Image (cartoon, rainbow, N blue to C red; front, side, top):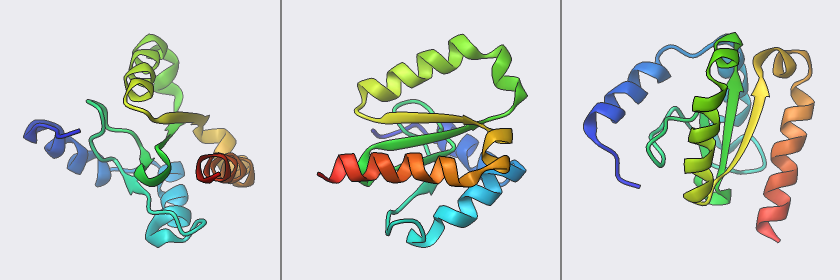
Length: 117
C-alpha cells in the first residue's frame, strides 16, 4: 500500500480543497467521533485517493458531485482496484448526503457492524 510522492502531494492538495459535503462529513467522522472509528481523508490507498477511508474496517467512502457523471467508467475502475485491495466502497451523491446525512451514517454503521462480527 506504499504510494509514490507525487500521489502524496496530490492528496495534500485535495485535503486543502474539500467540498462543502466533504467538510461536513469530515466534521462528523474526524477524531474518532463516529463509532470510535479512525477515518482518514484524501489519503493514498491502492493507487487511488478516496475522499475518506477507515483502514480498521476496510471501508472507503466517496461523496460524488456532478463531475462524476462524466467519469463513471473511471470511478468503476477505481472501485475495482480498491475492492481488489480488500476495501468496500460506499459511494454517495453530495446532494443526498447534504439532504439526509443520517442515511449515509447508517450505511457506514451497518458496514462497521458486519465487519466487526
